[in-house]
Structure formats: structure tokens, C-alpha cells
Length: 303
Image (cartoon, rainbow, N blue to C red):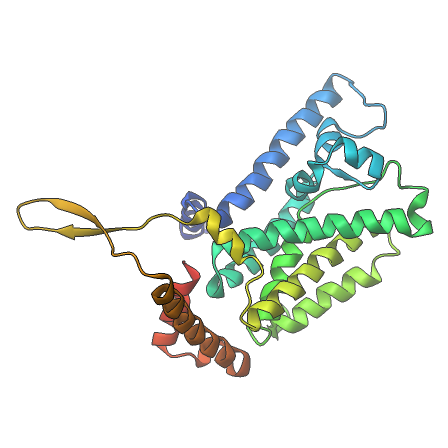
């Protein structure tokens, strides 16, 4: 008798979500907010509680409005909307794409960069959406009550950023076969452009905002400039070196501080080494790297 239960897959999921890192936590935040929002919405339905505009209570407080007046009253929504979903399949699709793109992203870059790509991509999506609904006449009638929600702009930003950074990276897709990331990115962008006249124009415009940031960030990284490097300041910690003496337990000592000149020289040398590796990836793909080069890239991505 065959069983659908796959302990290896379950263990992999458990291991992924047990990690104390940004990537799984972003997915968990989306899931938890969806579940809480659903329970609130369900409770309102059971007790026949209705809002004046027909929106659910979570949507009223978490989705980003296109109206500048409503936005001024709820400015936090430019952040909260990128973690809030009302449809299960909307959440599922976004998180599957995020897991796919985020896993590739973290092969080359670090979780700090992933977090800020997600956040800034979401903010760019909100900016595109709000600007479009206040500028183009076709949207003005819907503007007073229109809202946007979901992680799609943030997720697409991550996908497009890594595709812009390593465009030759090849993925294997079911029923399609091997395809380079750059073609997948182009497909996503074109799909959104051609869908603007459909049922969800605001959502597709927001996606393009996220994609725009992904392109800008990915190409800046290829040129050796990290546009979110300033965020490293928030995660800097004083590192301690552990030395052991036999029979005397462990003792802790701070490593000798570098002078500014020494530090800058060391960072420049490291950056030059990384730039050479990234150039090699752009020319010949990730598989062309030696084991040593892969180790250097992996070590750098964890800083």
C-alpha cells in the first residue's frame, strides 16, 4: 500500500521554519497575519457584523488605500499591506514564488539584503499603485474606495532582483525544462503589463513597482554597489573571539580592533575578490566557479 506521507518533505519543512533567520520568518508573518485576519473575518460573518464599505475589518486597517486622504489617516498601511492576504490561494502562490526566488537569492546574497529587497519592493509597489490611481483618469472613479493588499510586489521584487543579478542562472521548471532566470523575469513583467486592463489593474501596477526596484537593485549589485548597505548598521554587533585553555575552561577575548585604514583596505580587497567571482558568474554561470570560489561567495553572503 502506497502512502502519501513523505517524512523527508515534512522534516524539510520543519527544519526550514525552525531556523532563526529572516527568510522563514517573513513567510511565517504572512501566514500568521492571514490566519488571524481570516478568523476575524469569519467571526464577523457568523455574527452578521458588517462594515460601512463592505470590506473586512482586517482589510480596512491593513490594506493600503489609493486615496491620499485615507492614506493620511492610515500611513502604516504602506507597510502592512505587503504582509496581508485575504485569499488562501493568493497567499499560497505568493509564498511558493517567494520560497523559490528567495532560495536562489540567498545562494548569492544575504538575508539582510533579502529583507530590504522585500520591504523596499513592497514600498515601491505601493508608490506605483497610489500614483497611478491618483494620476490616470481611468482610475479616478474607483480611487476613493480602492485598496491593495498582498505580498506580490515584494515577492516579485526579490525574483527580479536576483534575475537581474545573475541573469544566466538556470532553473528547471516542470513541463517546461531548463530556463534562465532572465527569461522568467521578462515573462513575469510582460504578464503584468498585459494584465493591467484586466480585473485587477491596481495589483498589476503594484507588481511593476516591485519589479522596478528589483531591476534597480539587481543591476546596482552587479556594478558593485549595494543600495541597502546602510542597513548593515542596524545589525552590527561586536564580535568576540573564544579561546580555550586545557583544564581552565573557556575564556573570551575581544579581537584587536582594526584602524580605519586597515579596515577599509581589508573590505576593498574582499569586495574586489567578490566582484571577480560575480563577473565570472555573469559570463559563465554559477557552475563555472571552483569550490574555493563558491565557499568565498557563501561566506560573504552570511555576513
